Image (tube, rainbow, N blue to C red):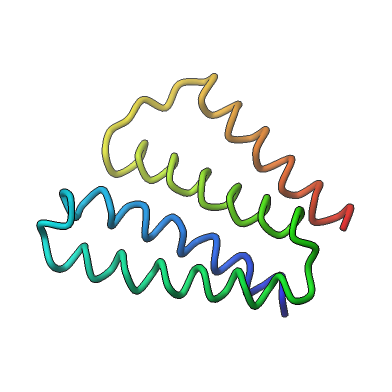
Amino acid sequence: MAWIVLVVSGVLETVWAAALSRSEGFSRLGPSLVFGVALVLSMAGLAYALREIPVGSGYAVWVGIGAVGTALYGMVALGEPATAMRLLCLVAIVGGVVGLKFLH
Protein backbone atom coordinates (compact mmCIF):
# COMPACT_ATOMS: atom_id res chain seq x y z
CA MET A 1 0.00 0.00 0.00
CA ALA A 2 2.85 2.39 0.80
CA TRP A 3 4.22 2.10 -2.74
CA ILE A 4 0.82 2.90 -4.26
CA VAL A 5 0.49 5.97 -2.04
CA LEU A 6 4.03 7.00 -2.99
CA VAL A 7 3.28 6.75 -6.73
CA VAL A 8 0.06 8.76 -6.34
CA SER A 9 1.98 11.35 -4.32
CA GLY A 10 4.58 11.58 -7.09
CA VAL A 11 1.82 12.19 -9.64
CA LEU A 12 0.42 14.89 -7.35
CA GLU A 13 3.86 16.50 -7.41
CA THR A 14 3.42 16.88 -11.16
CA VAL A 15 -0.04 18.36 -10.59
CA TRP A 16 1.20 20.99 -8.15
CA ALA A 17 4.18 21.88 -10.34
CA ALA A 18 1.90 22.37 -13.34
CA ALA A 19 -0.58 24.38 -11.26
CA LEU A 20 2.24 26.53 -9.93
CA SER A 21 3.21 27.37 -13.49
CA ARG A 22 -0.41 28.18 -14.36
CA SER A 23 -0.93 30.30 -11.22
CA GLU A 24 1.25 33.08 -12.67
CA GLY A 25 2.89 33.89 -9.35
CA PHE A 26 -0.26 33.05 -7.36
CA SER A 27 -2.18 35.79 -9.18
CA ARG A 28 -4.79 33.31 -10.52
CA LEU A 29 -7.07 31.81 -7.88
CA GLY A 30 -8.01 28.47 -9.51
CA PRO A 31 -4.50 27.22 -10.26
CA SER A 32 -3.30 28.58 -6.91
CA LEU A 33 -5.92 26.51 -5.08
CA VAL A 34 -5.07 23.40 -7.13
CA PHE A 35 -1.40 23.99 -6.25
CA GLY A 36 -2.12 24.20 -2.52
CA VAL A 37 -4.36 21.14 -2.36
CA ALA A 38 -2.07 19.01 -4.53
CA LEU A 39 0.99 20.11 -2.53
CA VAL A 40 -0.57 19.19 0.81
CA LEU A 41 -1.85 15.84 -0.48
CA SER A 42 1.49 15.06 -2.12
CA MET A 43 3.46 15.80 1.05
CA ALA A 44 0.98 13.91 3.24
CA GLY A 45 1.21 10.89 0.95
CA LEU A 46 5.00 11.04 0.97
CA ALA A 47 5.01 11.22 4.77
CA TYR A 48 2.64 8.24 4.98
CA ALA A 49 4.69 6.16 2.54
CA LEU A 50 7.94 6.90 4.37
CA ARG A 51 6.60 5.09 7.42
CA GLU A 52 7.30 1.83 5.55
CA ILE A 53 9.72 2.78 2.76
CA PRO A 54 13.30 3.90 3.50
CA VAL A 55 13.63 7.67 3.12
CA GLY A 56 16.37 7.50 0.47
CA SER A 57 14.42 5.23 -1.84
CA GLY A 58 11.04 6.81 -1.14
CA TYR A 59 12.15 10.37 -1.69
CA ALA A 60 14.10 9.50 -4.84
CA VAL A 61 11.09 7.68 -6.31
CA TRP A 62 8.74 10.56 -5.38
CA VAL A 63 11.03 13.17 -6.92
CA GLY A 64 11.66 11.01 -9.99
CA ILE A 65 7.95 10.56 -10.69
CA GLY A 66 7.36 14.27 -10.21
CA ALA A 67 10.31 15.29 -12.38
CA VAL A 68 9.45 12.96 -15.24
CA GLY A 69 5.76 13.82 -15.05
CA THR A 70 6.44 17.54 -15.01
CA ALA A 71 8.89 17.30 -17.92
CA LEU A 72 6.37 15.29 -19.95
CA TYR A 73 3.64 17.79 -19.11
CA GLY A 74 5.87 20.59 -20.36
CA MET A 75 6.52 18.75 -23.61
CA VAL A 76 2.91 17.71 -24.25
CA ALA A 77 0.92 20.67 -22.92
CA LEU A 78 3.33 23.58 -23.12
CA GLY A 79 5.19 22.81 -26.33
CA GLU A 80 8.62 22.38 -24.76
CA PRO A 81 11.04 20.53 -27.04
CA ALA A 82 10.85 16.73 -26.95
CA THR A 83 14.29 15.96 -28.31
CA ALA A 84 15.75 12.48 -28.37
CA MET A 85 18.30 13.41 -25.71
CA ARG A 86 15.65 14.84 -23.36
CA LEU A 87 13.56 11.70 -23.76
CA LEU A 88 16.62 9.50 -23.21
CA CYS A 89 17.36 11.36 -19.99
CA LEU A 90 13.78 10.83 -18.82
CA VAL A 91 14.12 7.12 -19.58
CA ALA A 92 17.27 7.10 -17.44
CA ILE A 93 15.35 8.65 -14.54
CA VAL A 94 12.57 6.08 -14.90
CA GLY A 95 15.17 3.30 -14.95
CA GLY A 96 16.71 4.61 -11.75
CA VAL A 97 13.33 4.88 -10.05
CA VAL A 98 12.35 1.34 -11.05
CA GLY A 99 15.74 0.10 -9.90
CA LEU A 100 15.29 1.70 -6.48
CA LYS A 101 11.88 0.10 -6.10
CA PHE A 102 13.18 -3.37 -6.88
CA LEU A 103 16.37 -3.00 -4.84
CA HIS A 104 14.39 -1.83 -1.80
